[in-house]
Length: 254
Image (cartoon, rainbow, N blue to C red; front, side, top):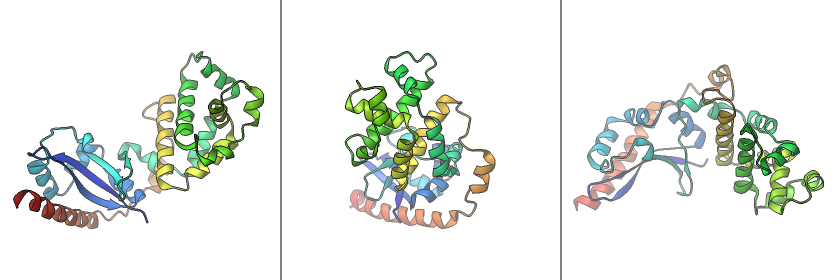
């Protein structure tokens, strides 16, 4: 299973930047681990004391806020991802079927698409939905093989004067079957499924309220992993720190 690493990025007294690996886990377990904490400060404060001592003594010369220091990256060092905390538990425990269904329910009508394109959306809600589908189109559809899987017949008939890009975007934003095709494709990869849920959550909070959850607290509670082996994780953290310090000391104490 693909692994992801939580890092702390700090700067030492020589003004050298270092990425200190904390823990490596599969993506779901990583999210379950970080979601035990309320924010970056809480996560930092709950690290083993050995980690905090090393960071405070060696990697705290930038004085940045903690949210600028923590990040998640895959072990090929290709992807930097957001850290999920306790207030985003709905993002972690919502099922892909529930996400798909909510996205379908958020689709635009052809009339609403026209309203956005003519800039006459008075509430702003339609524009927010449009921006969500535009993001999906530009990141996952445009110039990619999945383009040929998007059915444009209805939009080509209703709005024949759109550009090629706008035709495909409108077809995605207004057609539930096209949305389902994209969601099915994205959910084959954990990173994409996570990012899809994260982006939809932003839309959901914009349209509703920042405190409203995508799923009920009862569902979150029943699905939550209550058997995380935190003590074993701390052992790995200390091993990672030991390896890092060995190389670090070679570099600066030789």
